[in-house]
Image (cartoon, rainbow, N blue to C red):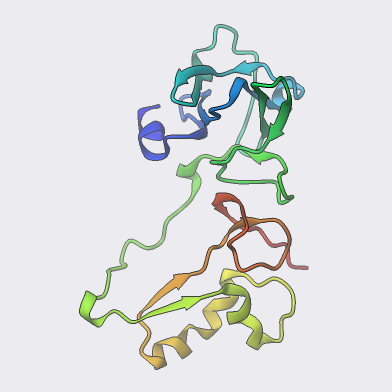
Length: 198
């Protein structure tokens, strides 16, 4: 639990040893729970108010462990506000969503992602030439009128190198409502917008 908590701090964090640690910021709530497919969407995992608006729960230490979730299991955060109204919300720290705006969050082990940038090194600051890249418009040269992908940008990277560019700053790529956007209307900011290209 320590490495997940220290690295991410918040959201639903599955633990390699089983169970999960959940930490949600909801300063105006009187109840915060996790409801999920594995609990028949009943808000059964009640988080504890730890002060300053934070709610936490170590699901792996619950007395009855009658839940069963795997990577990709759907869940949501259930919140009851101070005025008694209830809300179903995706996890704002979700690493993965089901692809619909304000849809279900999906459990995900960060350790499952295989990084491939071990050999990367930063150019010297006085030689740094940055290109601010919007994925959608950068890929328009392909004649693509719908959503673009990061992979589609690869074909044009040599052009940037020829211009003297040695660093790219992506405009926001986080999940947003809709299929075309500049990226500033973020719905869940810790996960990349998923585009299904047919």
